[in-house]
Length: 292
Image 1 (cartoon, rainbow, N blue to C red):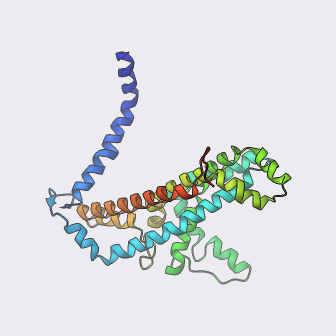
Image 2 (cartoon, rainbow, N blue to C red; image 1 turned 120 degrees about the vertical axis):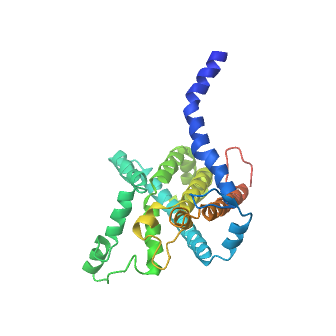
Image 3 (tube, one colour; image 1 turned 45 degrees about the vertical axis):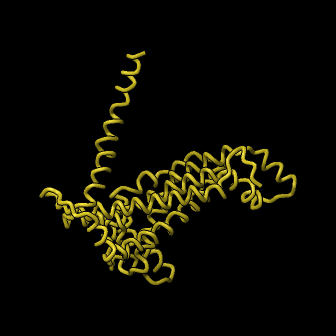
């Protein structure tokens, strides 16, 4: 029995070491550094709450936080709605359905890569594919990245395009629903739209909740797209908090202040996650629930 435990720990050791080295230790270290003045060269100097006080008067931080919240509250609902819409379509028994399921999933694998971000920048460039199509059908070309009113929306589209992972989870949930429920509803005269809202949606609310949490956390951590495509511009209209943290840490060498911003971001994510769990009691339905 002792040898079996030792063997089990040996198999788990790569994960445990990785968790400690790349997650737990940096997590604790960043909390300590958030209370220090640290430039990555000299030893950290304890500064107490100075970084957090500075943050309260930092207009760039407030602007970046506002942009981040707008980005998250735009991206997450759009992405979940589109993923569910595609999942419903792919749930039908169509010819070559396996090919279409794979094709819709691929963007979620490639969407976070630098290459796709560069491609997105060229697609929405002044002489890019999107403007070529618009001008060919009689519309004026749009300044997608140079106009602050359009830049954040364009970055949001890139995030929504990566809907594949959420779509696959939705599809698995849809396929687990007992088809006899739809047959009974049809006999009672219910249409497809009525069945969707009163059968499908309530039964997949646990999956909706799971995707909501996962997509919200990922959206708050978005970096590649805005950094590669716009660099946070124009006029910092796409300057998300992860970009600000990166600039403070590795361009201004203000690691203490960057750590403080990162902890504020962590607290915001935690508060919204707790709020989502609290609200789930009112709208998420699990098997065996007897709520009216």
